[in-house]
Length: 209
Image (tube, rainbow, N blue to C red):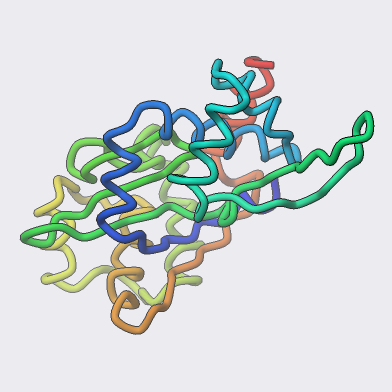
């Protein structure tokens, strides 16, 4: 759970974004992997069972279309064969890509958000005003913002369907946009007990098992 209390905005190329967002199975695999791995590495068979597909179908998708999104964390010998336990390659990441006219597109596997920012929003949208304002303090102290976005930065968010008051992920995305040219990412650490989104995810995942 510790890694999930951190938000990192990372850039993904448009081709990778499109190959995932237009494919329901790949979205289901990523969302399930991120949720299951909150408790530690998972076997590919357990992941396949969670998604409801055959093992060979999962391996094909992981090997060919989702290879950049996972890594082997541990290997075990089970009944004379080698079993790989896997985790997300970037467990804290929300991925974005930029389209025409500055449109922002999002892949947030843990929140199961895939699509244009204007349509899917952010993981913070389900939080109360009190909650997201508390988290904003962590974003503003950990990112490149000292106070509030400049007018042109606010205009970028507004053109992507976002409205003030800004949520923590809104500001983190703006920071990441600044760093795309230099390859820098924006990382924000929020104490686990202060992140209502993470509390909801863990409670839901526990109930699903």
